[in-house]
Image (spheres, rainbow, N blue to C red):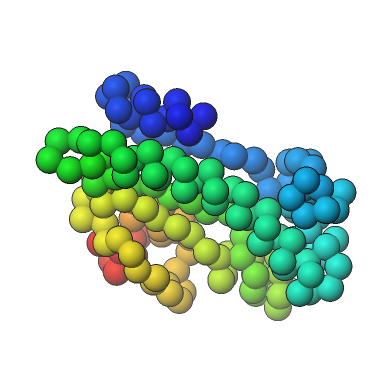
Length: 171
């Protein structure tokens, strides 16, 4: 699918794509990656054992997803486009189901379904996106990263329900 998305962009068949590698609760057997009969969702809830062991196994599952995202980004980086590379005109976002922190939905101080401490990656240089930085966006929602990417590619300001706005440090 990464190759198909890259080719569709290269052939100018589309300017937008969405790729969902898996759902976080997909019943995708993580055994080949982590040595446990579990899906990634189960691992995030401690099926991997102790906190250290469980977090390591979740990280291994996330690394598998990141490997494929990185593959797609490398294809964009290697493809000439105009006076630069395709990556210069792309805004790609990678995010997961949740982070770890307070969950207002269930009141838990440490929830595997929190939008706090959630890692969200944005790649590309479309619309002036700043590359190669880590931004700690305290008080922001992961949806703000998606809205920032949409703004970078020229989409009008929008909101996702109660979440609206961008993260200026990314632009």
